Image (cartoon, one colour):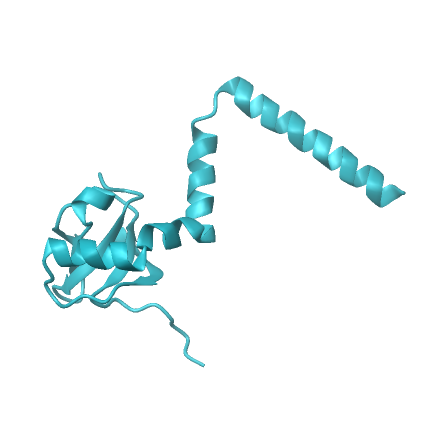
Length: 132
């Protein structure tokens, strides 16, 4: 059984984890060297322009698209739409977790208080059921 399941390859969908495009998805278009790759959004879907980025600034996802090395923007966009990558990403637990973190970060003080009260009520109901 192989230890690694995700490899840096042309067509791999990556999540940018640092910089101005943090939290956005992109597609690996070409491997530059052992430390950098060329990525492209496509820009009109994800908002990421074609650029060279370090491997330390991206996280590999399980998603891939079938594209050629140095594919044009139109080919990448067509591959994303045909394989419905955005919907597949939104269905992953990783994306759901990021969305909930973002939602919690935008809560006000009263919103956080309401979440705390709801957790207390839920835990009280669970404790009552387990005690019975």
